[in-house]
Image (cartoon, rainbow over all chains, first blue to last red; front, side, top):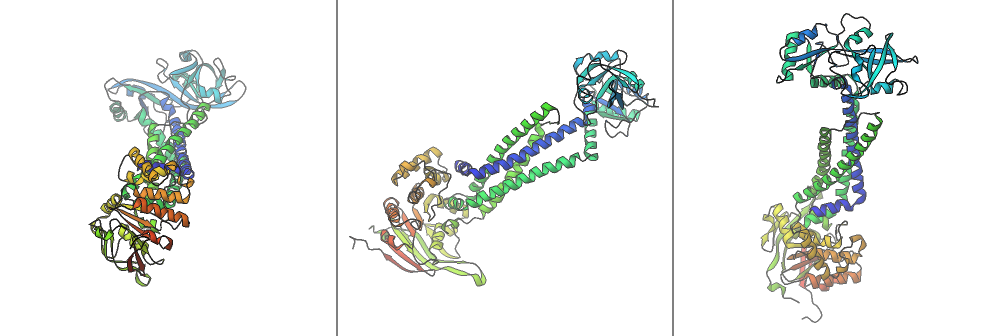
Length: 376
Length: 240
């Protein structure tokens, strides 16, 4: 009877297309919005992922990576003294204004890396040599800085600008993950970063550390917390802490959540209604099938097969369209779009829920259907 | 004419009572029906509209629960079968022809005819092969791949007859099979039903109020106000 079910489904072309459109729209909306949402979340913690170190030591009251709370300069040595720590280096991170030669000002994030190791440096360099930041007044920029500060004609290797009235010379352009705020990142050495910024009592933003081989990173972070009284997180913990902060303190979660919920409800409404109409219009035919000896169980199986067939087709088409959208937006770099397998699995579960709900309405109708209807 | 009453009763109905509604709106539709229908015969069930013909037909088919009485079909008491087994029994032993044909619009003529076999879990290729053979018997072999909408009403009813007979049912139930057809087409369908549908190990029940086709039956049962008022053999030209 599966053959009959599918022929019935594809035979009513108008309703099939309406069902397909409804489900495709729902899937596309959920995948597209979900992927942009997740892309934004990834952007929000790019300050952590771009540095690619296993342990972040912070002020114990820190809320998220961009809310820097300086700690005492002695923290580096204290962390180094914790058993299980392989190395620990200082990191400066702070906001500053850059003045270009054309007189324009741009807010930048200044990142100061420990000069002897350059731990936390970006892995990929697009132009120049990152090690050249060890030269006098040298800085490296991320590629987004080039875009934000006037484009490749204004900002390139060799460009000179001012940071707090001090010279900065671009020696490299690095490739990094875009940040949520999209503020240009300027890399230099820790010591030079301290010279660029106005004098403060505390200048150390974070201590970056790595556990010794064989010692679990979670164990070392726990020891750092206990022995230094500072905050210590694995990179993953700190990323999630930042994501949760963004979700709690901005409207992003509610905004995207509402759209995703809307997609789910609209999909369910269209699919449910169309499927119910499809069943009602074929009631006599279903009654005839029942009279001819088709059990309610078989009819339910047929309805579920129809629902899941159109559902999975809509899933494929919807994901395809959302992916094309993502591909196009990713090319322009304007919107973050990260389509994860977890999201696709979640959408599949949501879609199966929509299909099951739609099918159930029809199945209830058919279960109550008296086959005697065919004689009326 | 076959001496049908020498055959065992395929349908044995006793004291059938059926009502619809409750309280002041309660309507007694069947008021104690006793009826035997024999293998090899075609019984016409006639009477005025609202007299209970279709209700009795539904009860005999086991698709409508009765309030009181017993119905045995081919020796099986329908009332004692649970719903699931009754559905299976119906699929294995009965064929249906409806006034509105009830063909599935998305299926070709051959596929429509194959449906009862598919319900019996016979494979698609074999079902289609037997469906085409059945369509050949009703003179529609050249229309096997047509959708119902591309067939005339007469052809649609032929497809419905082929569908009803394809699984060799022992009880063929026809509800107003000529109601949607004009006179000549109605005659043709009844001729086909007699020719293809009747056999010694099958009984055919036809509900109709079309007096032009009465002569096709073997016996005529008149139903008025929920009671059978007469059952009489139908005299045919050349028979005593």
